[in-house]
Each structure stands twice: as C-alpha cells, then as structure tokens.
Image (cartoon, rainbow, N blue to C red; front, side, top):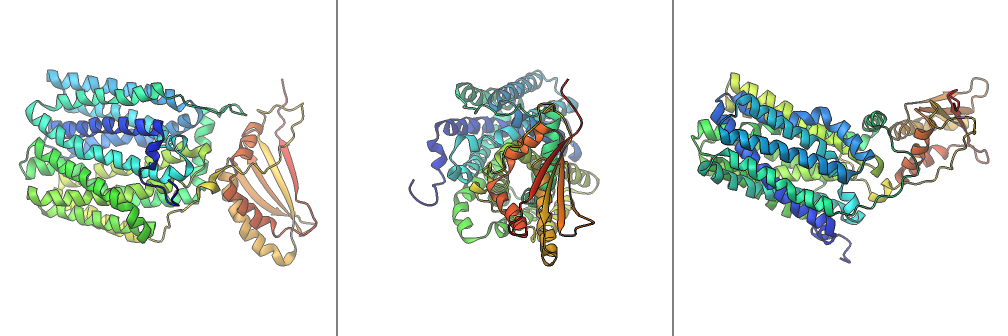
Length: 529
C-alpha cells in the first residue's frame, strides 16, 4: 500500500465498501437475471420488435425524469435511510412481477408497467449509490473504487444471464423475478448494519426545490462535467441498439433459446471483466480521451457484427468484445464524472450524468426498435454503427477532465460575511459586489480572465452574474452576482474549492497594487417578523 499508485483492489480494505460491494454483486446478479427473464418473456408475449425494445425503454425512461430530483434528495437527506426505502420498494415490485408471471396473469402492459416500477427504483437509487464511494474509501482509492464497482457490475453480468438462461429454459421467467426480489436483501442488511458518520451541518439543509435548481445551475456552468456528458451522449444513444435488439436477434433470427440468450449476455459480462483487468495498463499507455474513442469505434464494429452475423458461435466472441469495449467507455466516463465534481453537489451532478446515460439508452432503444419494426434489425444496427462512429469522431476534441482530488476540497478562504440583526437570513435575493481597480492596459486580459469567474459563481449557486465599468472612472470595474437568500450565500462560502482559488487569483493579479478589492453584500428588503 506504499506504492504511488494504489492497487485496483485497495478499496476492499475498507470494510463497509467491501461488504456493500459483495452485496451489490449479489443484487446485480438478480438484476441481470431479471433482464434475461423480462426480455425473454416479452418475446413470448409479443413478436413486435418495438415491444421488445420497449423493455429497455421502460427500464431507462424513469431516470430521464427522476434523476435530478433523486440527486437532490441524495444530497440533502440521510443516504443510508433513503437507500433502504428504495431497496425495499424494488424488492416489492419484483415480488409482484414474480407472482403474476407464475400465475400466468402477466400481459405486455403489466410487464412494461412493472419494469417501469423497477426503473423508478433504479432512478431513485443510482445518484445516491454513485455518491457513496467517496464516503467509504480514501481519496487516493476513489478511482479504483469506481473501477471496482464497474467490475462488480460486469462480474454479475457474466454470472446472472447464464444462470437465468438455464432457469428460464427449465422453469420459466417467474423464478428469475423471484430471485431478483430476494437479491436486494444483502444490500438492505449491510445498510442496516452500517454506522454512517455524518458531520453536524453548520447550516440548515437545502430545501428540495432549491437543491434541484442549484444542481441544474451547476450542470449548466461546469465545463468539466459538460465534457463528460457530451461524450456520454455520443456513445450511449447509438450503442444502446446492441442490447435493445439482442433478444430479438436470438429469438427470431437465430431461433435460439433462453439459454442461448443468457450465454451471449454472459459473454458480454466475461468480456467486461477481462477488459476491466486490462484497463489499468491501458490507462498508463493511452490517454483517456483516445481510450474512450477507440473503445467506441470498437463497439461500432460490434454493432456491424450483430447486423451481419447469424451464427451463434461467431456471435459469442463478438459479444465478448462488446463487453470489453463497453467497460472501457463506461469506466472511463464514470471516473471522469466522479472526480470532476465537489462533494456538496456530487449526487446531483452524477444524477445528470446518469440522466444522460439512461436517457440515451431509452431514446436509443425507442429509435432503433422503431427502425427495426418498420425496416429490419440489420438496417437498424448498421445505422447505429454509422451513427456511433460519426459521433465519436465529431466529439474527439471534447476533452475529458482530469481533476486532482485535492482541487475539489473546500478552500474555506472567504471571510465570514456579517448580517445585521434586523435582517432575516432567509431574506433575499442577495447581491454581492466586488470593486476592482484595473489599469487601462490590463483591461482586455482582466475581462478575459473574469469570464471564468462567471462559470465559477454560477456553478456554486449564483443566479446571475455581471461585470460593469464605472462611467466616471474607467479604472473601476464592478463584478456582481445574485443569490437566492443569505443562507444560500453562506453555502456558497463553503462550496468554493481549492482549484477555484486559481480562478480568483488569475483575476486578482490585474488589481492595482496597494488597492484593496472592495466587497459589499446587499440583501433584499425582507426583515424579521
């Protein structure tokens, strides 16, 4: 553990992370068994490619609507209790699905609605779950923890589908749903036993709607996060075609069984695990941007293989390669997203990434399923491959962030502002002004540097920002920004990171030497009752 680069397995020395990781593998095995059972059951209920693709849409669509609210909840409530409630909900939905399937009462509509119910649970869970790792491991172990979580998901992907294929063939889909219901209880037990230490907050918790608005402003103003989102959308929208149409390829064009479908999904999982083992070496030799681009183009080749190959034995290595390419892209994007946002907004920022992920999967499933219904499966896959290749090349210049963990730590360098006893700290809006004295020859460089201040203020909570020049004294420049309330401004004080100190320094270097920057705070005329 004294090496400069931590072992890929080093996060497992943290007991809570280790047990949650093991429990999540068991839960994900149940989830992948459900995927096989639901996909195969739908092909039994309907031969429509659109209906089969709608399984992926129903599972992914709730994320598009609930991701940001779920991220806001995860940032302002106790994550442990929140996750317990969500896990119990998902287990209950899986029980209902198992009972309906066993009794033969399941229909296309019921299957889609219950899959939607599980998708709601996933949408509520994922932002909080994604934001757990920084609480469970050291800063140095965070990239390894994110990668290890991906390994766990894909290890489950190798085991779950193979088991499900056998069980569906022998017993029927209902058993995969029942096992999925039971699989949630490992995570529930670990969460119950986890003694989570929460620091006593210095300020009242953010309100729900305000937290959503703040998270949205952060996403709009954070260029590092936006780079991750662009690259993610470019990949997932087109790559979704493979998994959305695979059940139909096996059932209708290969005349295969549920066991065959499970083996192909198991090949994806095995490929992903093998790919994850190779990723540390690849990252040492290949820049992250080019690694994502290369893996994306490889996945485009996989889609072409799915379009033209109709031999089961040839498709197994194709799906193995798809798993390796998928994990290379997914792990790289997740690490970039995790390490590019500060702790105070992590769940909300990650919820936007998850929204893009599932929104891209849902929209892609609907798009490629519709094309397959009106034309052919092969044409849909060819178009998806071409789209993925084009999107990859078009976004190659969008560089993924490489943020040091220390840069995201709160700087706490702003002095505490004073508030008159006559004013309510809930009052607002609040206007903050900073008056600079800038020599005429430095104005152009000062204005260019100040543009970065706008993004910084807004991602930390400012509603609006501006920069104005004094009409009677052109040396004087006034920076101003508005915030919702005095409380929100106090939260802003705790959000400025060490990395953002450099942005402030790049602006303040143009201040006339010996002249202080004058800072004032103005509160909207709300007084205490």
